[in-house]
Image 1: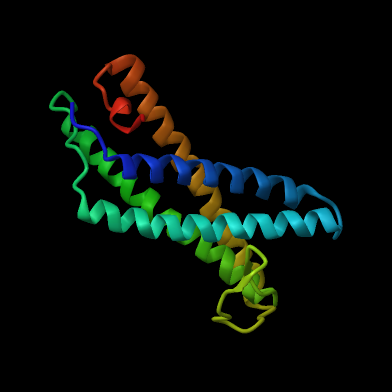
Image 2 (image 1 turned 30 degrees about the vertical axis):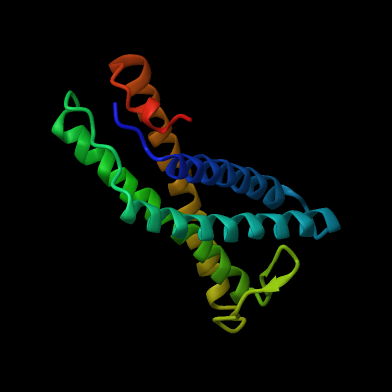
Length: 174
């Protein structure tokens, strides 16, 4: 059985954990009433997670282009291979689109993004009260789409492991 490279596995699981953490933190912070020091801290952490995901996703995409992933098992139906390939494309798009939409939403709201409290990211758009609610909605829709895609991806991997027993999940396990 051919497996993903150790670098691909590390990036996959690290990005997965960061996405889950950012999603959970996003749910917690948006449910907090008012503006409190804790809520502001959570917003910063959420942004830092997003910027980290964006950077690691770029590395992962470069790694994937330079290192061909293992082929699908021969036993997989053609439609499943196409669905898996399509899901990977969707996940890659979302790994870029979700953090970028959050970044532009933050800028439209008039706040800088200061990565880890040290590096101020470039301000690419001016504060824009008209654009802010649109970008907030875009970020929310993309985030929920990513949550659904990640869940579908995980369920498909578990289906391959427990029902099909075709080794698909083992290719990505350390």
